[in-house]
Length: 315
Image 1 (tube, rainbow, N blue to C red):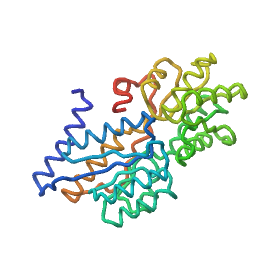
Image 2 (image 1 turned 120 degrees about the vertical axis):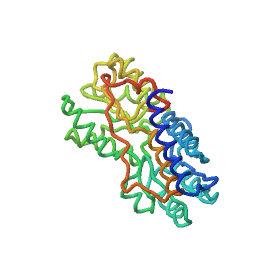
Image 3 (image 1 turned 90 degrees about the vertical axis):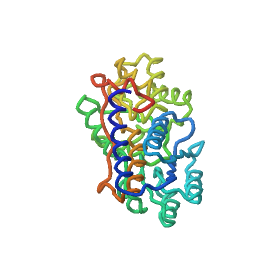
Image 4 (image 1 turned 45 degrees about the vertical axis):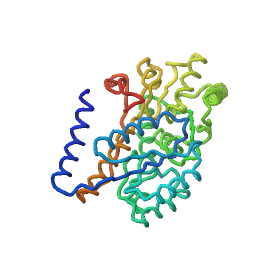
């Protein structure tokens, strides 16, 4: 076991030991995590791994549920079904406030403790009655990335949005534009989620806009095909390329000098910490007083380390 896991395991084991030593431990706690991710999005494997590890360490039952195609109406129904099953807690993303706030409020009204992760905002989490928010402020992360790119001389860009139905994805693109001090305009494209289509649309945009300084992708789903597109066009390593989130191909591209940086929102923590928080809340009545920002952090070639070793699994 490496140092990372020893540290995380020690923290969770100590928390569990404290719970058992000082309070009557509840039996059979069950927590359900509902995400908006389609089955095809491999980035969420890290979420699943964090959830499973926390469940093992805290000795609770955990479940992962999601809409197979990423349909948010389907996700709303899944939250309703999870609520009806009577878990001790629900951990859920808030990908679209208008679609999901109702089912989440109903879960809270039924007496289920809820923690919002990944998408939405701390303010929205409070409005729906959630205990707290664990995630990355998406606009702020995009703005920080835009400022970083501006410092590197970028003035125009392409934002490859593979999940434009989720408002948080557009916040990333808008934040990047504002960080650069330019209008977003038509610099954001709806790429869809099919790898071949993403690759073709990136190539079409760059061919039509040859003066584009930079490319911003929003995760492995759009980053991996964009890497192939730039390679095919002979632009790999020559055009400024930043991305949100990490994955095996992204880490390799950072190492190869194709991608300048990846914004790490630490999805492991988004799944792991809520299970620990909920378990100790139910066993001890203790709860952190603030929301938890799991990102952003910039990962560059100079600081890969464990990130490279654990990319796509725990990072």
